[in-house]
Image (cartoon, rainbow, N blue to C red; front, side, top):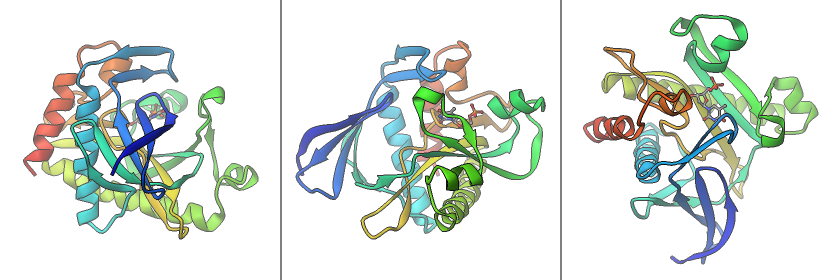
Length: 236
Ligand code: TMP
């Protein structure tokens, strides 16, 4: 397999074509951003940690019967993935109040929600990724009702599997963001990444953040936290 032309470069990853048209080559970058790119920094070692953590989590989900676009880890910073047609949606699942949910609705951070909440956001940087509902999704033609039902079903299954996995590592899965895509045969699969950049993870004993909130809120170095997540995942 050979890495070919750059297809797309995002804030945290670059995607390349390969000699196989059905496969893409992902390079995880060290760039960290917050507030839709308002805060931007290079953090040495972040790319390799997120690549390894995402690879571990996609493997763990596969063991639970949940498929993703992940094919294999190629190197410390690279993955081979299936090429999928991405939905222009960010799917957030919340178990505990935090972040924009707490801020928008005035609910104190840390309150355990009575059931997992699934939210949808339009993936559009120019509009700051606004929150949308199922009717917006239908009107904007972002997914059909059946596709959305499948996305939400998978998001909740992923939440159950990851909540259990992290609990076994003494970590509370507060909330996280997922993205989905469609394969050539129209199967809906989990895509993008699952890492401390895209999840809120709190230490079960101290409730300390082990995720990107530390960068977002200028509270210190994220690398030791991401290393701690990877270390615990490797012990599973
Ligand atoms: P929020 O509380 O800021 O809406 O974030 C909810 C979760 O989604 C949190 O775990 C961080 C993740 N997230 C992303 O991965 N990318 C984003 O662009 C945003 C806004 C949130």
